[in-house]
Length: 101
Image (cartoon, rainbow, N blue to C red; front, side, top):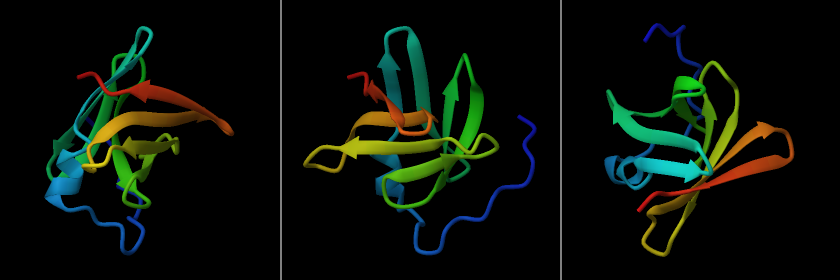
């Protein structure tokens, strides 16, 4: 996929391999599905409707979609594994996508 150069990562927001692995999976709401995976040591989200974007870390569970500027956050359970992905397609209105078991 052709992508322009990456935006800088916020200082102190590098994730460990375990933190990235805890976010990997499929997330779904209604007929909208998104897949999060690790590509070249970075998190990437892909959906048939929107394409593929790297997730730029802004905190341990907060990200920004590269090129789109869309805010993404993950909800974690007690074991630090993601249970849902929240996407702000519109400011102030998160779209919650539960993780597919």
